[in-house]
Structures are given as structure tokens and as C-alpha cells.
Length: 119
Image 1 (tube, one colour):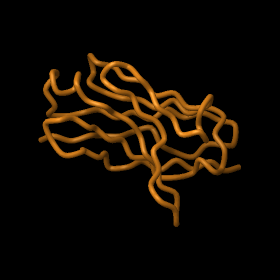
Image 2 (tube, rainbow, N blue to C red):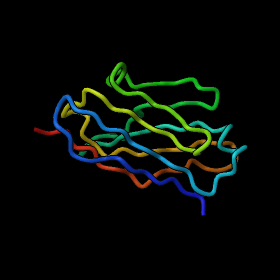
Image 3 (cartoon, helix red, strand yellow):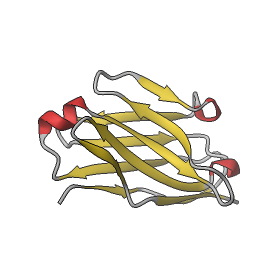
Image 4 (spheres, rainbow, N blue to C red):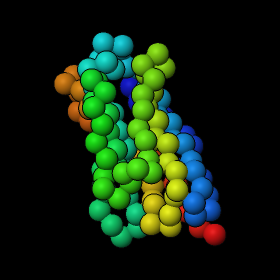
């Protein structure tokens, strides 16, 4: 079964850090290598927005609101993507969704993981 499995969300105080993980399942290596992976988030009452992404060539793209605080990375051996989030602020509170884009299928989405930044 092809799917994305996310982990790593939780409750953190302002200024704290979290690392989200997104592991692929059922994806062959050649498809993983050619894909773009990244993260969106959706806060209550707001549109889903792109947070960060990394192409197969290693190019990255970040939302202006997270530049300098968040880092997207990939582990090709584990066929996984990660989002390191530092200096978290209450406005970062949202459900974070991992995604996987390749030419072989429609976009895959993870199940979502809640990140809450609060004192």
C-alpha cells in the first residue's frame, strides 16, 4: 500500500523546536528519487499553505514566514522527508501535512500531524 506516514507533532512553548518526519511506504526507489516532497500546513479557519519543499535535485522552497527558522531535508536511504522547526511561534500552530509529488501518480498526502505552540 502506497502511503505517507507522519510523526513528530505535539505541544511546544514559544521559542521551542520540533522535528516532523514523513516516511514513504510502497514507493520504489526510482520514483522516490524523482519526486518532490514537502510540507503544507492548515490553521483553523485558514487556507492550506505551502511551508517548505525539496525537489529531487535538492532545491528548496520556503514560505516567507518560516525562512530562517524551518529546514526541510530528505533521507534517501529511508525514503523520508523531515521538517526541522525552530523558534516556533503561536502563529505556527496548525495541522502539518506532508506531500509527495511524482510523475507516476497523483499527489500523495500524509495523514496530518498537529503542532501547537502555546505557553
